[in-house]
Image 1 (cartoon, helix red, strand yellow):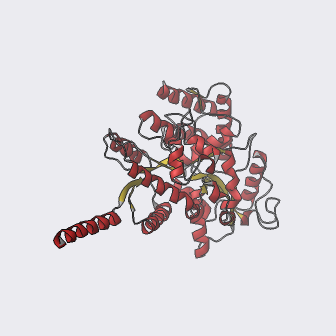
Image 2 (image 1 turned 90 degrees about the vertical axis):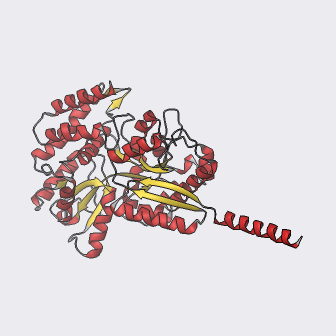
Image 3 (image 1 turned 180 degrees about the vertical axis):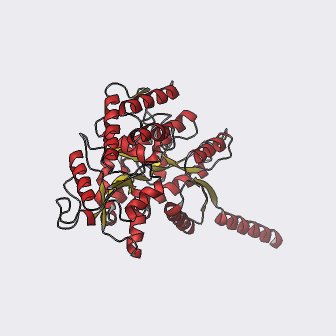
Length: 425
C-alpha cells in the first residue's frame, strides 16, 4: 500500500510540474527593421519575460511584396505564423485572397480591448464592407511637415516660441518656400521625388484635400476625380518648375537634404522623427527643427495615412486551437497597453487610452501632429491599392515623369487611369 501511495504521489507531482511548465508558443512574423525593429524586439522580450506561459517566437524580414507573398503562401498551406504585422492598406487584398481570420468582439474582450478603444478611421480600414474586423490597429503613421527654423527666423512663419505658423493654404506654403529659397535654401522642399512612396503619399494627400479619391466602385478617377488628380500633379510639377523640390531624389537622398541643412522643409513619414531626435541629441544636426501635420493646403483637411496592425492568418485547412487564439489575443492586448513605447518611433498610437494619455501628451513632436489621426485618409479600398501595390508603381512610373516635366499632368492622369483600370478589369 505504501508503494502504491508513493507512485500516486509521484505521478501527481510530475503532472503538476508539467502543467506549471506548460507554455504556448506564438509564432510571430513581422516586417519591422531598423529603429522600428529594435523597439519591437524590446517589446517582445519584455512580454516574454512577463509571461512564462506564453512565448513569442518572432521572425523579422523586410517589408514589401516579398513579405506579403511569403505570408500568403505559408498561410495557404498551413505552415504560416500564428500572427503577423500587417499594413491596413493591404487588408482589401488580403480579404480577396482569403488569408486572414476575422477577429470577433469576444476576441477583443479576451484581450481587454473593444472597438471603441481605437480611432474610428483605423477600425474602418481594418474591417471589410460589412464591418467584420480582420486586424487590430497598432498605430497611425502619416506624412508630416518637418521644418528647419534657421531659414524662417524673423519671418511671419515662426511664432515667439519658434513654432511654425501662418501656413493655411497652398499660397502660404509656396510663399514660405520662396522665402526659404531667398534665405539660402536652394532646394527648400525635400521629399522622395525619385521613388514611389514619397510621390504617392503627397499626391494622395493633395487629391484627398480636394475631396477626391483614386478608385470608387471599381472605377479609377471617375467623374471630377480626374480633374482633381490633374490639379494635384500640377501642384507638384510647379514645385519642380520653381526649383523648390529636388530632381529624382531617392529616399535616403531626400532625408539627407534636410538633415544636412540644405532644405528648409521636408515632407516624409513620422518614422523619421527618431532620426532627427537622435541627431539632435548627438549634436550632429546643426539646426533647430520642428514638425507639424501637413497643413490644409487645399479645400479639405485630409492627409495620407496607413497603420501597422496585428492580424491572424489562416492555418491552411486546420483551425487554430482556442488555447492558441487566446494566447495571440493576450499578446495583442499587451502590445496595445505598451504602445507608448512604440510611439517613441514617431507613430501615433491607434489605441485611444494611450493616445489620450498624459504621457503621450508630453511626447514631442508627436503630440503636436497627433490631431492628424482624425483626418487620416487611407488608400482606396481596392485589391490594387495599398503599400507596395500597383498604385505605388503608378506613382513612380507615371506621376514622377510628370512632376519632373516629362509629361503633362493631363497625360499622366490619363495614363494612370488607363493602366490601373486595366488591372481592375
